[in-house]
Image: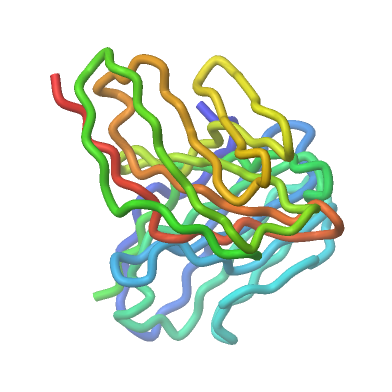
Length: 115
Length: 111
């Protein structure tokens, strides 16, 4: 058990809809990362927050947004969903921003299916 | 993040040692070498990381070449539970950086 909790585990929704994925980081971790994993693209970095502030953006679509709350949990909002957004979405957390080489700890993901 | 090269797949027998290679010829002096693995239907799991010296932990050992252009993840006695995709990733320690995953090596373990 990594200590990172993601909810829900599974989500099925229709095209055009909006969903929110939730992540609770490990106790004491200030940094939260979101990744998307699809069969054809592999694991893609989306966005990172550190102590409530956005620190890095990867291949995140404009239809997607995220935030980290004062209690350090994070939410990833996906809107105007398309079939191609069907994927596994992973959240990870780490103690700091990364200069020390601190590892990332991943949750077990949310499987999103868009029909 | 600098690029790494790994074999697409490797096979091993249970209870035998496994050496998973990774080439990173363009590594910079400030890059950490990280290894993660992903078991089926699970999120990636941290295995080990190092900068210059060889490293050991309860899961594995990491052997880093003297010129740092290659490294090897060593599983001392493979179990069926070690069947996973193993990712070798370079992560810059000089400032801020995230983990950029490649395709990794799929390790198959036979009983």
